[in-house]
Image (tube, rainbow, N blue to C red; front, side, top):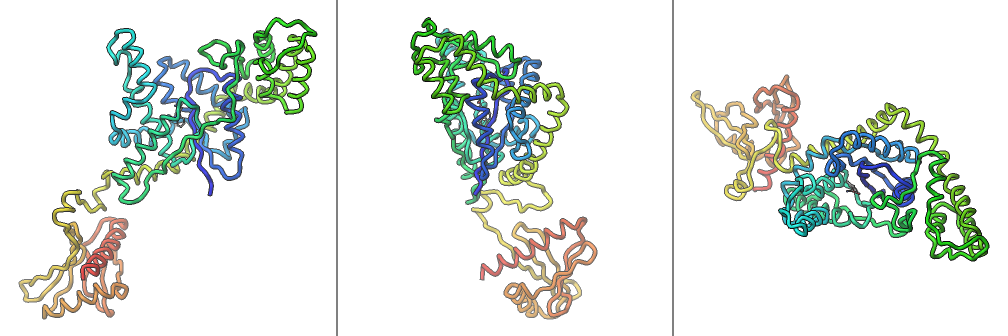
Length: 452
Ligand code: TRP
Protein backbone atom coordinates (compact mmCIF):
# COMPACT_ATOMS: atom_id res chain seq x y z
CA UNK A 1 0.00 0.00 0.00
CA UNK A 2 1.26 3.45 -0.73
CA UNK A 3 1.52 5.90 2.12
CA UNK A 4 0.34 9.39 1.50
CA UNK A 5 2.75 11.90 3.00
CA UNK A 6 1.80 15.56 3.18
CA UNK A 7 3.48 18.63 4.50
CA UNK A 8 3.14 22.39 4.21
CA UNK A 9 5.79 25.07 4.10
CA UNK A 10 4.77 28.43 5.48
CA UNK A 11 5.79 31.11 3.02
CA UNK A 12 7.36 33.75 5.15
CA UNK A 13 11.04 34.52 4.73
CA UNK A 14 13.77 33.17 2.49
CA UNK A 15 15.00 29.63 3.08
CA UNK A 16 18.51 29.25 4.50
CA UNK A 17 20.98 26.41 4.75
CA UNK A 18 19.37 25.15 7.95
CA UNK A 19 15.96 24.83 6.29
CA UNK A 20 17.62 23.02 3.43
CA UNK A 21 19.47 20.43 5.53
CA UNK A 22 16.73 20.09 8.14
CA UNK A 23 13.59 20.00 6.04
CA UNK A 24 13.90 20.42 2.30
CA UNK A 25 16.59 17.87 1.53
CA UNK A 26 15.15 15.06 3.69
CA UNK A 27 11.66 15.68 2.33
CA UNK A 28 12.85 15.47 -1.26
CA UNK A 29 14.77 12.27 -0.50
CA UNK A 30 11.66 10.79 1.09
CA UNK A 31 9.53 11.75 -1.90
CA UNK A 32 11.71 9.60 -4.14
CA UNK A 33 10.81 6.36 -2.40
CA UNK A 34 8.66 4.10 -4.53
CA UNK A 35 5.78 3.47 -2.15
CA UNK A 36 4.99 7.02 -1.12
CA UNK A 37 2.60 9.50 -2.64
CA UNK A 38 3.87 12.89 -1.51
CA UNK A 39 1.99 16.13 -1.26
CA UNK A 40 4.04 19.28 -0.71
CA UNK A 41 2.45 22.65 -0.66
CA UNK A 42 3.21 26.29 0.00
CA UNK A 43 1.10 27.23 2.99
CA UNK A 44 0.50 30.77 1.86
CA UNK A 45 -2.82 31.15 3.68
CA UNK A 46 -0.94 30.31 6.85
CA UNK A 47 1.64 32.93 5.94
CA UNK A 48 -1.07 35.59 6.03
CA UNK A 49 -1.54 34.88 9.73
CA UNK A 50 1.98 35.98 10.50
CA UNK A 51 2.61 38.62 7.90
CA UNK A 52 0.67 41.58 6.56
CA UNK A 53 3.26 42.70 4.04
CA UNK A 54 1.99 41.65 0.60
CA UNK A 55 5.37 42.17 -1.09
CA UNK A 56 7.06 39.90 1.39
CA UNK A 57 4.39 37.22 1.00
CA UNK A 58 4.74 37.28 -2.77
CA UNK A 59 8.55 37.21 -2.68
CA UNK A 60 8.64 34.34 -0.23
CA UNK A 61 6.18 32.21 -2.20
CA UNK A 62 8.26 32.58 -5.32
CA UNK A 63 11.56 31.92 -3.54
CA UNK A 64 10.22 28.88 -1.77
CA UNK A 65 8.73 27.40 -4.91
CA UNK A 66 12.02 27.94 -6.76
CA UNK A 67 13.99 26.51 -3.84
CA UNK A 68 12.04 23.27 -3.72
CA UNK A 69 12.14 22.78 -7.45
CA UNK A 70 15.83 23.65 -7.71
CA UNK A 71 16.62 21.29 -4.83
CA UNK A 72 15.29 18.39 -6.86
CA UNK A 73 11.60 18.06 -6.07
CA UNK A 74 10.02 16.36 -9.07
CA UNK A 75 6.58 17.85 -9.71
CA UNK A 76 5.74 14.91 -11.96
CA UNK A 77 6.20 12.43 -9.14
CA UNK A 78 4.81 14.46 -6.24
CA UNK A 79 1.84 16.80 -5.98
CA UNK A 80 3.31 20.27 -5.50
CA UNK A 81 0.89 23.17 -5.16
CA UNK A 82 -0.01 26.39 -3.41
CA UNK A 83 -2.62 26.15 -0.67
CA UNK A 84 -4.29 29.31 -1.99
CA UNK A 85 -4.89 27.67 -5.38
CA UNK A 86 -7.20 25.08 -3.81
CA UNK A 87 -10.47 26.83 -2.90
CA UNK A 88 -11.76 23.55 -1.50
CA UNK A 89 -9.37 23.91 1.44
CA UNK A 90 -10.94 27.02 3.00
CA UNK A 91 -14.36 25.55 2.27
CA UNK A 92 -13.44 22.38 4.12
CA UNK A 93 -12.02 24.54 6.87
CA UNK A 94 -15.49 25.90 7.51
CA UNK A 95 -17.03 22.43 7.74
CA UNK A 96 -14.32 21.53 10.23
CA UNK A 97 -14.65 24.80 12.14
CA UNK A 98 -18.26 23.86 12.85
CA UNK A 99 -17.22 20.68 14.65
CA UNK A 100 -14.07 22.00 16.34
CA UNK A 101 -14.41 22.62 20.03
CA UNK A 102 -13.34 26.11 21.01
CA UNK A 103 -11.84 24.61 24.14
CA UNK A 104 -9.56 22.48 22.00
CA UNK A 105 -8.32 25.50 20.09
CA UNK A 106 -7.84 27.46 23.33
CA UNK A 107 -5.11 24.95 24.10
CA UNK A 108 -3.14 25.39 20.87
CA UNK A 109 0.45 26.38 21.68
CA UNK A 110 0.76 29.30 19.28
CA UNK A 111 -2.41 30.94 20.54
CA UNK A 112 -1.66 30.17 24.18
CA UNK A 113 1.82 31.62 23.91
CA UNK A 114 0.37 34.89 22.62
CA UNK A 115 -2.18 35.01 25.42
CA UNK A 116 0.49 34.29 28.03
CA UNK A 117 2.65 37.06 26.64
CA UNK A 118 -0.23 39.51 26.85
CA UNK A 119 -0.96 38.51 30.44
CA UNK A 120 2.69 38.95 31.38
CA UNK A 121 2.54 42.46 30.03
CA UNK A 122 -0.72 43.19 31.83
CA UNK A 123 -2.54 43.52 28.55
CA UNK A 124 -5.95 42.21 27.60
CA UNK A 125 -5.43 38.45 27.04
CA UNK A 126 -6.52 38.68 23.40
CA UNK A 127 -4.73 41.90 22.53
CA UNK A 128 -3.40 41.73 18.98
CA UNK A 129 -4.63 38.16 18.47
CA UNK A 130 -6.50 37.54 15.22
CA UNK A 131 -9.05 34.84 14.48
CA UNK A 132 -6.51 33.68 11.90
CA UNK A 133 -4.08 32.79 14.67
CA UNK A 134 -6.83 31.23 16.77
CA UNK A 135 -8.10 29.07 13.90
CA UNK A 136 -4.65 28.22 12.56
CA UNK A 137 -4.97 24.55 13.61
CA UNK A 138 -8.32 24.18 11.83
CA UNK A 139 -6.84 25.45 8.58
CA UNK A 140 -3.98 23.04 9.04
CA UNK A 141 -6.47 20.23 9.68
CA UNK A 142 -8.20 21.12 6.41
CA UNK A 143 -4.85 20.95 4.57
CA UNK A 144 -4.25 17.49 5.93
CA UNK A 145 -7.75 15.98 5.83
CA UNK A 146 -8.55 17.28 2.34
CA UNK A 147 -6.14 14.72 0.92
CA UNK A 148 -6.53 11.95 3.48
CA UNK A 149 -2.84 11.96 4.26
CA UNK A 150 -1.45 9.25 6.54
CA UNK A 151 1.88 10.73 7.57
CA UNK A 152 2.66 14.33 8.30
CA UNK A 153 6.38 15.06 8.63
CA UNK A 154 6.69 18.09 10.90
CA UNK A 155 8.92 19.69 13.48
CA UNK A 156 8.15 19.14 17.16
CA UNK A 157 6.34 22.45 17.41
CA UNK A 158 3.71 21.21 14.95
CA UNK A 159 2.92 17.83 16.50
CA UNK A 160 0.10 19.24 18.59
CA UNK A 161 -1.53 20.63 15.46
CA UNK A 162 -1.47 17.26 13.74
CA UNK A 163 -3.05 15.72 16.81
CA UNK A 164 -5.78 18.33 16.69
CA UNK A 165 -6.38 17.46 13.04
CA UNK A 166 -6.81 13.88 14.15
CA UNK A 167 -9.27 14.86 16.88
CA UNK A 168 -11.30 16.98 14.50
CA UNK A 169 -11.31 14.19 11.89
CA UNK A 170 -12.55 11.69 14.45
CA UNK A 171 -15.34 13.96 15.53
CA UNK A 172 -16.41 14.62 11.95
CA UNK A 173 -16.33 10.90 11.12
CA UNK A 174 -18.45 10.15 14.13
CA UNK A 175 -21.02 12.84 13.39
CA UNK A 176 -21.35 12.42 9.65
CA UNK A 177 -19.62 9.22 8.56
CA UNK A 178 -22.60 6.91 9.18
CA UNK A 179 -20.15 4.17 10.01
CA UNK A 180 -17.78 5.10 7.24
CA UNK A 181 -14.37 6.68 7.84
CA UNK A 182 -14.79 9.84 5.81
CA UNK A 183 -11.37 11.10 6.88
CA UNK A 184 -8.19 9.13 7.29
CA UNK A 185 -6.71 9.78 10.73
CA UNK A 186 -3.32 11.46 10.22
CA UNK A 187 -0.17 10.85 12.21
CA UNK A 188 2.70 13.21 12.85
CA UNK A 189 6.09 11.99 11.76
CA UNK A 190 8.92 13.62 13.67
CA UNK A 191 12.21 13.58 11.88
CA UNK A 192 14.41 12.39 14.73
CA UNK A 193 17.32 11.52 12.47
CA UNK A 194 17.53 14.96 10.97
CA UNK A 195 19.65 17.06 13.26
CA UNK A 196 18.91 20.75 13.27
CA UNK A 197 21.81 22.57 11.72
CA UNK A 198 23.67 24.96 14.02
CA UNK A 199 24.11 28.52 12.81
CA UNK A 200 27.15 30.82 12.73
CA UNK A 201 27.19 31.19 16.52
CA UNK A 202 26.46 27.56 17.35
CA UNK A 203 22.83 28.04 18.32
CA UNK A 204 20.16 26.48 16.08
CA UNK A 205 20.33 28.14 12.67
CA UNK A 206 17.37 30.48 12.61
CA UNK A 207 16.41 33.80 11.17
CA UNK A 208 15.37 34.99 14.60
CA UNK A 209 18.94 34.54 15.86
CA UNK A 210 20.37 36.25 12.79
CA UNK A 211 22.93 33.45 12.49
CA UNK A 212 22.00 31.92 9.15
CA UNK A 213 24.01 30.86 6.14
CA UNK A 214 22.20 31.73 2.90
CA UNK A 215 21.16 28.89 0.63
CA UNK A 216 21.07 29.96 -3.01
CA UNK A 217 22.75 33.33 -2.92
CA UNK A 218 26.05 33.76 -4.78
CA UNK A 219 29.16 31.69 -4.18
CA UNK A 220 30.83 34.78 -2.83
CA UNK A 221 28.09 35.36 -0.23
CA UNK A 222 28.25 31.72 0.80
CA UNK A 223 31.99 32.04 1.34
CA UNK A 224 31.60 35.27 3.31
CA UNK A 225 29.01 33.70 5.58
CA UNK A 226 31.19 30.66 6.24
CA UNK A 227 34.10 32.91 7.19
CA UNK A 228 31.86 34.34 9.91
CA UNK A 229 31.37 30.99 11.66
CA UNK A 230 32.51 31.42 15.24
CA UNK A 231 35.35 29.10 16.33
CA UNK A 232 37.55 28.92 19.38
CA UNK A 233 40.92 30.68 19.32
CA UNK A 234 43.11 27.62 18.82
CA UNK A 235 46.07 28.39 16.57
CA UNK A 236 47.08 26.49 13.43
CA UNK A 237 48.86 23.33 14.51
CA UNK A 238 46.98 23.13 17.81
CA UNK A 239 44.63 20.14 18.13
CA UNK A 240 40.94 21.07 17.65
CA UNK A 241 37.99 19.37 19.31
CA UNK A 242 35.64 18.44 16.44
CA UNK A 243 33.01 17.02 18.78
CA UNK A 244 32.51 20.45 20.25
CA UNK A 245 32.75 22.39 17.04
CA UNK A 246 29.59 23.46 15.25
CA UNK A 247 31.71 24.03 12.14
CA UNK A 248 32.32 20.29 12.16
CA UNK A 249 28.59 19.61 12.67
CA UNK A 250 27.77 21.66 9.60
CA UNK A 251 30.51 19.92 7.63
CA UNK A 252 29.10 16.52 8.56
CA UNK A 253 25.72 17.50 7.14
CA UNK A 254 27.19 17.95 3.68
CA UNK A 255 30.06 15.47 3.46
CA UNK A 256 30.28 11.74 2.83
CA UNK A 257 31.19 9.57 5.85
CA UNK A 258 34.74 9.17 4.47
CA UNK A 259 35.20 12.91 4.03
CA UNK A 260 33.86 13.39 7.54
CA UNK A 261 36.37 10.97 9.04
CA UNK A 262 39.27 12.60 7.21
CA UNK A 263 38.15 16.05 8.28
CA UNK A 264 37.74 14.88 11.86
CA UNK A 265 41.31 13.54 11.94
CA UNK A 266 42.72 16.64 10.30
CA UNK A 267 41.11 18.85 12.93
CA UNK A 268 42.55 16.65 15.67
CA UNK A 269 45.91 17.02 13.95
CA UNK A 270 45.77 20.79 14.12
CA UNK A 271 44.18 21.89 10.86
CA UNK A 272 43.92 25.71 10.87
CA UNK A 273 40.40 27.09 11.22
CA UNK A 274 40.91 29.15 8.06
CA UNK A 275 41.72 26.02 6.12
CA UNK A 276 38.81 24.18 7.76
CA UNK A 277 36.44 26.90 6.59
CA UNK A 278 37.80 26.59 3.08
CA UNK A 279 37.09 22.84 3.16
CA UNK A 280 33.63 23.44 4.56
CA UNK A 281 32.92 25.89 1.76
CA UNK A 282 34.03 23.28 -0.79
CA UNK A 283 31.72 20.51 0.43
CA UNK A 284 28.70 22.80 0.71
CA UNK A 285 29.39 24.42 -2.62
CA UNK A 286 29.79 21.05 -4.34
CA UNK A 287 26.28 20.17 -3.30
CA UNK A 288 24.73 23.56 -3.98
CA UNK A 289 26.46 24.74 -7.17
CA UNK A 290 24.13 22.98 -9.57
CA UNK A 291 20.83 23.67 -7.78
CA UNK A 292 21.97 27.27 -7.29
CA UNK A 293 22.19 27.71 -11.03
CA UNK A 294 18.82 26.09 -11.52
CA UNK A 295 17.40 28.32 -8.81
CA UNK A 296 18.65 31.44 -10.59
CA UNK A 297 17.15 30.20 -13.83
CA UNK A 298 13.79 29.52 -12.22
CA UNK A 299 13.59 32.72 -10.25
CA UNK A 300 14.09 34.61 -13.48
CA UNK A 301 11.16 32.79 -15.09
CA UNK A 302 8.34 33.19 -12.59
CA UNK A 303 5.79 32.38 -15.30
CA UNK A 304 7.29 28.93 -15.61
CA UNK A 305 6.99 28.37 -11.86
CA UNK A 306 3.41 29.57 -12.07
CA UNK A 307 2.71 26.97 -14.72
CA UNK A 308 4.21 24.17 -12.63
CA UNK A 309 2.15 25.21 -9.62
CA UNK A 310 -1.02 25.48 -11.66
CA UNK A 311 -0.48 21.95 -12.94
CA UNK A 312 0.05 20.86 -9.34
CA UNK A 313 -3.16 22.58 -8.26
CA UNK A 314 -5.09 20.85 -11.04
CA UNK A 315 -3.73 17.50 -9.87
CA UNK A 316 -4.67 18.23 -6.27
CA UNK A 317 -8.15 19.50 -7.15
CA UNK A 318 -8.91 16.33 -9.06
CA UNK A 319 -9.03 14.75 -5.62
CA UNK A 320 -10.31 17.72 -3.65
CA UNK A 321 -13.36 18.58 -5.75
CA UNK A 322 -15.17 15.22 -5.63
CA UNK A 323 -14.15 14.62 -2.03
CA UNK A 324 -15.48 17.97 -0.90
CA UNK A 325 -18.72 17.21 -2.72
CA UNK A 326 -19.03 14.01 -0.73
CA UNK A 327 -18.33 15.89 2.48
CA UNK A 328 -20.87 18.58 1.67
CA UNK A 329 -23.46 15.90 1.14
CA UNK A 330 -22.51 14.15 4.32
CA UNK A 331 -23.31 17.25 6.38
CA UNK A 332 -26.58 17.85 4.57
CA UNK A 333 -25.63 20.31 1.83
CA UNK A 334 -27.29 18.36 -0.96
CA UNK A 335 -29.01 19.10 -4.19
CA UNK A 336 -32.77 19.28 -3.81
CA UNK A 337 -33.18 17.27 -6.99
CA UNK A 338 -32.05 13.92 -5.74
CA UNK A 339 -31.84 13.56 -2.05
CA UNK A 340 -34.30 12.02 0.32
CA UNK A 341 -34.77 14.62 2.98
CA UNK A 342 -35.16 13.10 6.38
CA UNK A 343 -33.97 14.90 9.45
CA UNK A 344 -32.46 12.90 12.24
CA UNK A 345 -35.48 13.47 14.49
CA UNK A 346 -37.95 12.57 11.73
CA UNK A 347 -36.13 9.32 11.19
CA UNK A 348 -36.56 8.43 14.81
CA UNK A 349 -40.16 9.49 15.08
CA UNK A 350 -41.86 7.94 12.14
CA UNK A 351 -39.33 5.88 10.21
CA UNK A 352 -41.38 6.17 7.03
CA UNK A 353 -40.72 3.65 4.34
CA UNK A 354 -41.69 3.03 0.77
CA UNK A 355 -45.20 1.71 0.10
CA UNK A 356 -47.81 0.80 -2.47
CA UNK A 357 -51.01 2.78 -2.27
CA UNK A 358 -54.08 1.66 -4.21
CA UNK A 359 -57.17 3.69 -5.00
CA UNK A 360 -60.24 3.62 -7.20
CA UNK A 361 -60.74 6.02 -10.11
CA UNK A 362 -64.06 7.49 -11.12
CA UNK A 363 -64.29 5.05 -14.02
CA UNK A 364 -64.45 2.24 -11.48
CA UNK A 365 -60.96 0.87 -12.18
CA UNK A 366 -58.40 0.30 -9.47
CA UNK A 367 -54.87 1.75 -9.66
CA UNK A 368 -51.83 1.76 -7.44
CA UNK A 369 -48.95 4.08 -6.85
CA UNK A 370 -45.44 3.20 -5.70
CA UNK A 371 -44.35 5.83 -3.20
CA UNK A 372 -40.77 6.39 -2.03
CA UNK A 373 -40.04 6.67 1.68
CA UNK A 374 -40.00 10.47 1.37
CA UNK A 375 -43.50 10.49 -0.05
CA UNK A 376 -42.48 11.07 -3.63
CA UNK A 377 -44.60 9.24 -6.23
CA UNK A 378 -42.38 6.96 -8.26
CA UNK A 379 -44.92 5.02 -10.37
CA UNK A 380 -48.59 5.09 -11.29
CA UNK A 381 -50.21 1.87 -12.54
CA UNK A 382 -52.73 1.25 -15.29
CA UNK A 383 -56.29 0.46 -14.28
CA UNK A 384 -57.32 -2.96 -12.94
CA UNK A 385 -60.89 -4.19 -12.72
CA UNK A 386 -60.29 -6.19 -9.56
CA UNK A 387 -58.38 -4.86 -6.52
CA UNK A 388 -57.23 -8.41 -5.74
CA UNK A 389 -55.16 -8.30 -8.93
CA UNK A 390 -53.28 -5.34 -7.51
CA UNK A 391 -52.47 -7.18 -4.30
CA UNK A 392 -51.10 -10.15 -6.24
CA UNK A 393 -49.16 -8.06 -8.70
CA UNK A 394 -47.50 -5.83 -6.13
CA UNK A 395 -46.49 -8.94 -4.19
CA UNK A 396 -44.86 -10.31 -7.32
CA UNK A 397 -43.06 -7.02 -7.90
CA UNK A 398 -41.69 -6.98 -4.38
CA UNK A 399 -40.54 -10.58 -4.42
CA UNK A 400 -39.21 -10.82 -7.98
CA UNK A 401 -37.80 -7.40 -8.73
CA UNK A 402 -35.29 -8.86 -11.19
CA UNK A 403 -38.16 -9.82 -13.49
CA UNK A 404 -39.41 -6.28 -13.80
CA UNK A 405 -38.75 -4.59 -17.12
CA UNK A 406 -37.91 -0.91 -16.80
CA UNK A 407 -37.77 0.88 -20.11
CA UNK A 408 -37.02 4.49 -20.82
CA UNK A 409 -39.36 6.14 -23.28
CA UNK A 410 -38.47 9.75 -23.87
CA UNK A 411 -38.14 11.15 -20.39
CA UNK A 412 -40.57 8.70 -18.87
CA UNK A 413 -40.09 5.23 -17.38
CA UNK A 414 -42.40 2.43 -18.46
CA UNK A 415 -42.69 -0.66 -16.29
CA UNK A 416 -43.37 -4.10 -17.80
CA UNK A 417 -44.39 -7.32 -16.09
CA UNK A 418 -44.73 -10.49 -18.19
CA UNK A 419 -44.39 -8.36 -21.32
CA UNK A 420 -47.33 -6.31 -20.30
CA UNK A 421 -47.14 -2.61 -19.65
CA UNK A 422 -48.36 -2.11 -16.08
CA UNK A 423 -47.18 1.28 -14.86
CA UNK A 424 -45.23 4.39 -15.67
CA UNK A 425 -43.47 7.29 -14.04
CA UNK A 426 -44.17 10.93 -14.59
CA UNK A 427 -42.25 12.78 -17.31
CA UNK A 428 -38.94 14.04 -16.01
CA UNK A 429 -36.89 16.86 -17.41
CA UNK A 430 -33.42 15.31 -17.45
CA UNK A 431 -31.82 11.92 -17.95
CA UNK A 432 -30.15 12.32 -14.57
CA UNK A 433 -33.51 12.51 -12.86
CA UNK A 434 -34.63 9.40 -14.70
CA UNK A 435 -31.56 7.52 -13.60
CA UNK A 436 -32.15 8.58 -10.02
CA UNK A 437 -35.75 7.44 -10.24
CA UNK A 438 -34.71 3.99 -11.43
CA UNK A 439 -32.50 3.73 -8.37
CA UNK A 440 -35.29 4.96 -6.15
CA UNK A 441 -37.72 2.38 -7.53
CA UNK A 442 -35.25 -0.41 -6.84
CA UNK A 443 -34.60 0.96 -3.40
CA UNK A 444 -38.30 1.23 -2.62
CA UNK A 445 -38.95 -2.37 -3.68
CA UNK A 446 -36.04 -3.54 -1.62
CA UNK A 447 -37.31 -1.71 1.45
CA UNK A 448 -40.70 -3.36 0.92
CA UNK A 449 -39.09 -6.78 0.60
CA UNK A 450 -37.22 -6.23 3.84
CA UNK A 451 -40.44 -5.37 5.64
CA UNK A 452 -42.06 -8.67 4.74
N1 TRP B 1 2.03 25.13 10.23
C1 TRP B 1 3.11 24.52 9.55
C2 TRP B 1 4.42 25.19 9.94
O1 TRP B 1 4.43 26.36 10.28
C3 TRP B 1 2.93 24.59 8.06
C4 TRP B 1 1.73 23.84 7.65
C5 TRP B 1 0.55 24.35 7.24
C6 TRP B 1 1.61 22.43 7.62
N2 TRP B 1 -0.31 23.36 6.93
C7 TRP B 1 0.29 22.17 7.14
C8 TRP B 1 2.46 21.38 7.94
C9 TRP B 1 -0.18 20.86 7.00
C10 TRP B 1 2.00 20.07 7.80
C11 TRP B 1 0.69 19.83 7.33
O2 TRP B 1 5.45 24.55 9.86
